[in-house]
Length: 102
Image (cartoon, rainbow, N blue to C red):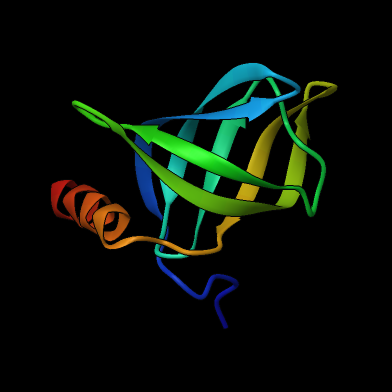
């Protein structure tokens, strides 16, 4: 039995989000239809909801997410597992481009 409902695809997708009027950046190290793993210097608490932004060529894609887990590495919380609450068609197209390049 596998732990994940959807296949995770390795990525190096830049993402950004806001916390306390600050812009925070991270790298989505793997992505799927309903979630992603984000490495960042800032991690929000479990169950936090926020809008994750994926910078595109001339705009950005905004997706509502919920933090499902945080991971501590070397004494610092630096990784968040997030659930995508409403993945868009544009996001799924990005996901497919990563699938095709693996």
